[in-house]
Amino acid sequence: MTPIQSCIVNKNNTKNPVWFMRQAGRYLPEFREIRKENPNFIELCLNKNLTPEITLQPLKRFELDAAIIFSDILMLPYGLGQQVEFKKNYGPSLEDLDLNKLLNVKDEDFSNKLKPVYEAINIVSKDKLLNEKDLLGFIGAPWTIFVYMLNKKSPKLAKDLKNSIFNKIQDKDMQKLLWIIVKFLKIHIKNQVESGATIIQIFDSWAGLLEEKSYEDYIYNPTIELVNYTKKLGVSVICFPRNIKNYKKFCEVVNPSAVNIDYEVDPKIILKDIKIPIQGGLDPKILLGDKDQLKKEANKYLEIFKDHPYIFNLGHGVLPETDPNMVDYLIKFVKDFK
Image 1 (cartoon, helix red, strand yellow):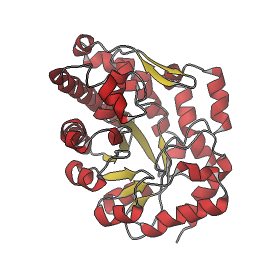
Image 2 (spheres, helix red, strand yellow):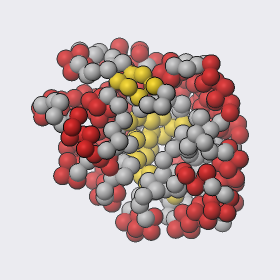
Image 3 (spheres, one colour):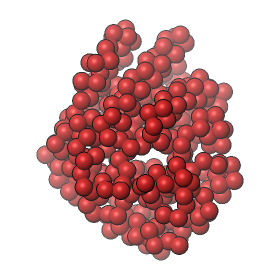
Image 4 (cartoon, helix red, strand yellow):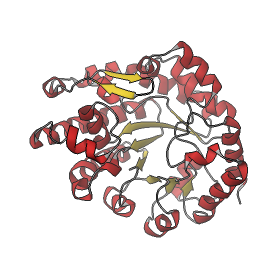
C-alpha cells in the first residue's frame, strides 16, 4: 500500500507522506521551457504527449509520494462546450453560458472531448516513477465550477457573486445548472479512475465566498453526491473546501476520505475538531522566505499532527516564484521528521 493510501485507509501516521498542489508548474524551469513553446494552456492540457512529461517532472526531481495529473478544473466547462481561454496577467476567461446548449451535451461527446486527458493519466499510471506512489486525478467542486461558468472569470470578492451571478439566472435554473455540472463531474471522475487515477481530489476553490445559509444547496448536497460516487468506485477522495467557514461541519456532513485545509485556519483547532485524515495547511508564501522560517512553520504542522493521520501539503498551490531548491529542502525535512 502506498504511503498516502496507508494514511487515508489505515490511518497510519508514521510515514510522513508528502505531495504539493501545483507541484508541476511554473516554478520549474523545465516546465517553463515547455510552456514557452506551448502558449495555449487548454491545448497544452489536451496534449497527451506533453501532459505526462509535465506531470512527472517533479517526481524526477523530488522524493514525492504522488503525482497529480497536469490539467485544470476548467476542463469541465470546456468539455461541455463553453469556450475557455487563459489570458496572461488575467487568468481564465469563459464565454457567455448557454444553458439550453448544455442541456443537449451528450455523455459520449463530453468524454471524447476530454479523451486526451484520460489518455495522459493512463500513460502516467504505467510509468516506473509511480512505483509505490499515487496518481491523483481531480475535479473542481460543483459550486466552484458553477461560479466560473456564470461569472466567466475568477471572482475575487464575495460581492462579485451578488453583482454578477445571483442576479443573472433564475433560482430554478441555478439548481438545474448545478446538477448538470454534478452529472458531468461524475463522468469525469469515472473516466479518470478507469484511466489509472488512484485518488480523486475535489477542489472547492471558492467555498469561502458563500454564506453558511447557502452551504446545504450549493456545497454540501452536490459534494456529498460526488464523494459517495467516488467511494463506490473504490477510490479515496480528498476534499479541499478552501476558506470554508466551518471545516468541522463540512467533514461531518460530507464525510470525505480526507480533508485538505487552508493556511487561514488554526491547525490546533482543526486537530481538535476533525477525526478524518488531514492534508495540507502550510502557507505557500513560506517557501519564498529563508530555510529557518520554512523549517519552523513545517515543524509546527508536523508536531501538531504527529499523532493524527496527516499528509503533508500546502494550504494552496506552489507559487510560480518559488525556488525549486526550497521545495527540495522542505520535502527532505518532512521525510526526516521523527
